[in-house]
Image (cartoon, helix red, strand yellow):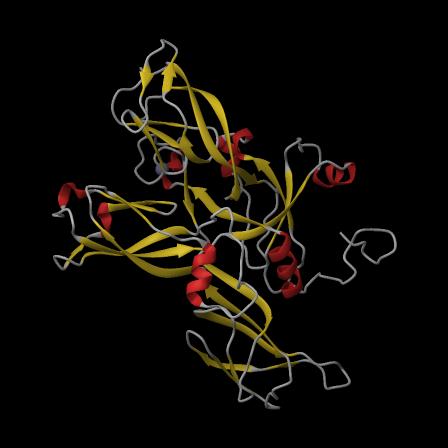
Length: 403
Ligand SMILES: [Zn+2]
């Protein structure tokens, strides 16, 4: 690593405050792929207590969702020279500001009137007309979701797995930008956000989407109310979300400890996000490139499932043995649902029994800043740092603060 040419410290030589594109380029290079899930309290919490059998939150007390829209701040957007802009991100869902950036000598900044926009173009007016060599900065909103479909052959298996590797998606789009040649040795994938349509191409029947549930890259179909035969071609259309890049620093220095106050523990992380990422307390951040394994002692609850202390469980590695030496078989007696629900589907320990589970998981953190970090035109400031705490050490109620 080179030394930064600035007296007195390791701050960047350029001021990256209020320069979103430079900030984003740094995070893009130095950050790690992460899944960011927002959480909000479930309506069943109104009474002050969680409804264990609530069908919206499954007794967790909060529901998960992905960021649906992102704001692209001051992009140097390509334009035709005829007052038509072609921003990088599509579809465009709103346009906030279009400005020509010039020095005072050249006449200063100039705001243009936004006449209209469609999925990929913004039409502006105002004098003087843009010239090809002039930079034009555009602040606009775009959807955070993309669409795709895959066709599967039904074969007695009700799980359909999508291939949503980020490098494969970029290749298919043939993006002629700096994403090309992206390395993805860890097989990082996008997540399904919503099912759009399920069609049986063999019988031309469109099934109601209520028969399906989603988990990461999987769609599970409940076939109890539909007609489906081995060999049928099933086309599933989905909406999915890309992971984000997040740059982190392990918190260890005294300086950082002072900054965050006294509730910092070892293992906590200082994180910086791209300018379009909305972050608030309680959000769940999973780093997608590293998997680890551990065992946890768990106690059988009254629910149909028990919650594993780590959030993003990939796989249960061994059969489960309870305190009475009774063995429960993987895939027969239990399976993982959602992110970390150990669902009992056949034989199960009696309520209150203790058992040990060995599993692999991806490291997950909870955002705990004490302040809202949503940015707007007035307070945009980079870098934006927040404190992340290890998921397994955060108590349930602390995740639901500030909403
Ligand atoms: Zn609920």
